[in-house]
Each structure stands twice: as C-alpha cells, then as structure tokens.
Image (cartoon, one colour):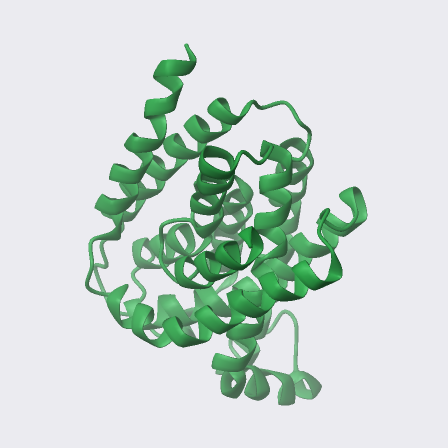
Length: 265
C-alpha cells in the first residue's frame, strides 16, 4: 500500500537535514499522482509517527524538563539549564506559530499544479542546501548559552520549514551552527523543539482541513511504519548527519526536481 511506503520513507528521512516533507511531496506528486494539497496534508499527518520516535528517543531529557516545570520561571534565562531550555522551547514555538500559520493557510489552498509545486520544492531544497553550506561553527557553546535572541531566531527559521523543500531540522541546525553551537547540542535542541511544532501543525491541519482522506486503518499503518522505520534509523542517522555533506545532496535533489518544470513550460 502507498501509505506504508510513505510511512517508511518519512521515518527514514525525518532525521536528515534534506526536508522529509519536501521529499515525500516530490514522491507523492511526481510518482504516485497525488494532488499537491493532498500530498502536503498527508506529509504533515505522517510526522505524527516520527514525533512519537522523538518522544521515546529523548524521553530522559523530556522527563527532566517535565519535572522542572514546578520551579519554572518564564523570564529567567539565567536560572538553570532546564529553565533555559523550557523558555527556549516556549518562545521559539510561539514564534514558529506566528510565522508558520499564515504560510500553512496559504499552502493548503489548492493554487499549485503538481509541476509547479515540485519545482518550488526543488528551489527550496537548493536554498536549504546553500544555507547549510554557510553554517560553519566559529566557537563552541553549550545549552547554558540559550537566550531570547536564540529563541526568536530559531522560532522564525522553524516557522519557514512549513514550506515544502525547507528542511525543519536542516534550517534549525544551520541556524544553531551559525550561532556557534556545537553540532551535538544543535541536533538535540532541534529535535526537542520539533515536538510542539509538529503538534501545532497537526492541530492546524485538523482544524482547517479536517483529517486527511485516509481510513483509520491506513492512518494507523502510516503512523506505525513511520514510527518503526524512525526508531530503527534515528541513532544511525544522528551520527551520519555530523559527517555527510547533506547540503550537497539537497542541492542535487533540488536541481533534479526542477527538470519537470522544463517540460511543463
């Protein structure tokens, strides 16, 4: 079934800074004949499977943050490591919503043909690749350096990841690196801040569009296989992401995605 393949693909690609959503949409529209709006909806829906992976894989960090809520102070960025991370996640999520919601409402309106959406996805994949290439760490920081400016910048960058082709992990990790954070810290914080972002996207999808047109059985299958493939691949891919030149891969895939536009014109 298509949904099983899409779920497996989502689980494999989510951890790489190459836009799992953009890649899924390219496959759905280009090879399976899905409409652009349906491809966007389904790609967001399948993120629920990889969201569960993040909750399981980072359960220790999530528990530590949860137990610190009772001592939490919103405006105190100097109090404790956990306090800073909670403030960072809250502020970045609010900014993500302010940026992402208008883009989401625009993207779910059926204004794109399949060829145009694929081309736009390709363009943004190239932009993502170039942005990653520019992200060079100049000095090392730790989580204790998180501040209001970081929260706002990361929230803005994550908000733009609703656009197909812009990798959420790719753009947020790149901003972290441009802000001189260590790669390990950037990876972990990027995935932690993805939790409320994915939840907001799912609620937005359900609120404005309702559930995607799949049966309950198909939905469970897609989420299950996204979770299964994600659990099997996250540890390996987190190591690979530090060594492989994914910026080059983004640019190559983006350029390939532009080819159908030539035939369209």
